[in-house]
Length: 430
Ligand code: SF4
Image (cartoon, rainbow, N blue to C red):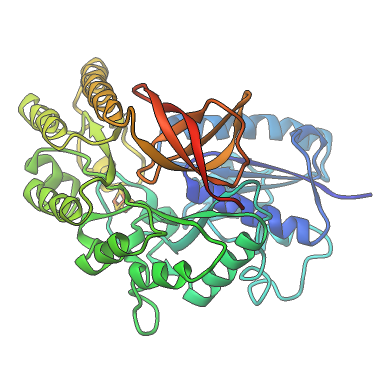
């Protein structure tokens, strides 16, 4: 009888990419996926610790798994991802029915749960195990972990220090993906411009982009998430020069006040962040730039918050992802700083940022009306094909278009969250 696995994933693109890799490993040894936990022989929960809500969802799944394991003691259970730290004693006590605790990318222990596991685990198995892509756009992790230790963030403790994948391994993977219909890759890293500093000859992200640009069937390269201090002029020049690299940046600022940035240990001042942004806009005036903001960080005064709002008004980001601060156990802020902003005040600040963001997004999107934009058709929702502009704007198309094709679209309608338009021309048919 075929062994079935159920793989549940929450969190960032990095987690999704990890799950795809693990699923490809299971597929390679003959397991079959199921979307029902109750029908699986092996259950893997790939977890996220960035917000309490994500952890709560995993706890609820673990509660159900406790019952399932009682009914079927042969069921294998693995807990993977950012909820698993260096020490697992507490988790082992709380969840004795879990067979394997695995930190991000530590797939080998999980593979040990299944029969017929390959002998070269940790050798040639993982570098040459690729997920079959589901559409024309795929995520490719290029650097794992983070060395920055921002006070509020759990990532460095759970994903470890920055570790880059060898360039030839990434090129092989992307070539495989393009041979299976992928036209766009997003290069992933917690701080993606950190790519390469730990490799022999220290190539940088620009070198990797140059190498990938040579793959004929690859049409577009994106990258995230950016970190201002790692974003060198050399990398920015590569983004500006290489036609296949999209001028689209995810550049978290987190706060507009130097006092808060300092307390967060973000490693830059507001002026330094703005100087980096000016460098981007100098080289690529039309670049799409999104950011992340945390409101209600410990000690954030009303004046600090006003500085954040003023920064948003002056920079005018294409999109702002805002979150209310919540202490994550194990972080520096959790250990040292009282969570002193009341929940209602955090909610007020959050809504204020959302209002600013929606108004500015709408205004920026309105400037697209009447223009012609190159779109990669990524899929269909309902009956409507959709894709994104070079700058990352979501566009819904009014008429059928082939998934995976690059098309020129005249934008006819602009909302705060997306654009709508009609295809004028196919730029390149896949
Ligand atoms: S740069 Fe800071 S916020 Fe981003 S992953 Fe690293 S520690 Fe976390």
